[in-house]
Image (cartoon, rainbow over all chains, first blue to last red; front, side, top):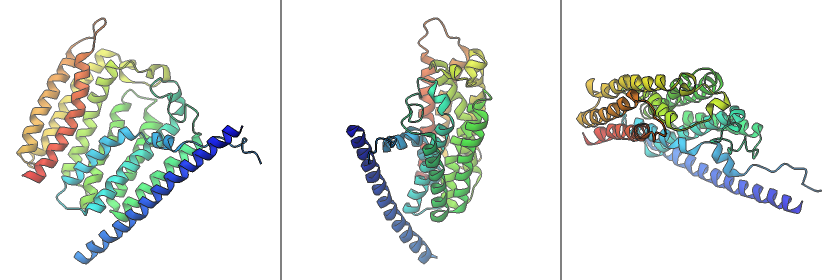
Amino acid sequence: MAQHDDEIRKRQRARATVLGLILGAFVILVFAITIAKIKAGMAH
Amino acid sequence: MSTTTLPMPADWRDFLALTKPRVMTLVVFTGLCGMLAAPTHIDPVLGFTAILCIALGAGAAGALNQWYEADLDAKMRRTERRPLPAGRMDRETALQFGVGLSAFSVILMGLAVNLAAAAILTASILFYVLIYTVWLKRRTPQNIVIGGAAGAFPPLIGWAAATGDVALLPVLLFALVFLWTPPHFWALALFVKTDYAAAGVPMLPVVAGERTTRNQIGLYTIPMGVVALLPWVLHLTGAIYGVVTLVSTLVFAVLALQVATRTTGSDDTMKPEKRLFAWSILYLFIVFGALVADKWIA
């Protein structure tokens, strides 16, 4: 039973880590898109 | 409080497997070629975002396909170890993941790139899930022909991402992938003992027999070759694309003719069929690569 609990915790931690990395990458992407859009706006 | 009553959460790798990552490589490649072949330059960040949305959209469609086909996947050796049939994830989670990822990819494409690309991406996801997976796959041996259209959208989306519009050349690229899919897939179906029959999926070799399948491979190669050469004939591309495509299409035609005109012997190694299948993959990369080279070198 304890082993089952450990496995649940382990999976939840791994999923949370992966999701955190994805959200971090998404923040960087949105920032880069914003810069690109500003540059495009200035070009017009 | 004991948590043993809690079900085991699906591993993150199962979410990745749900998206069928291997299928994404061709989708990303043809989408990128459609974008690079477009006359309009796109900012690299926005270009990257568009390709990312195409990949996420394809992944979402793959997840929804696995949500709907969990029963079929459980009956076939090739697919029984997928997350749903193997019991590592429940269907509700897969459905939510697929719908959420679809919405995210379309919204991001619409906000960051343009509405034309977002609209075509939406159409390709809906086409793959509703038309192919839900409606046709279990009902007609022509399922792979129609389903091929879903794989033909990416060049159109890549072009629309760069130009905000659609033109004749990307439509021809769409038609090329559409007509390429049947010979490609049926060559595979001839030498891979798939258990589609056991799962009740009407695949052409199973439903119509080998001779009809071989004939269809030969027949579809003709319009495929014509469409592949049309961009050159109509002066939409230069000679690099024209010559490279002419040579590689002739090789395709010779291999397809061999497959179309022979019959499987006893303990046959199916070498011509494997050769055609392998060449068909290379062929698409060569033709699209020549398209980009033609644009950037000429």
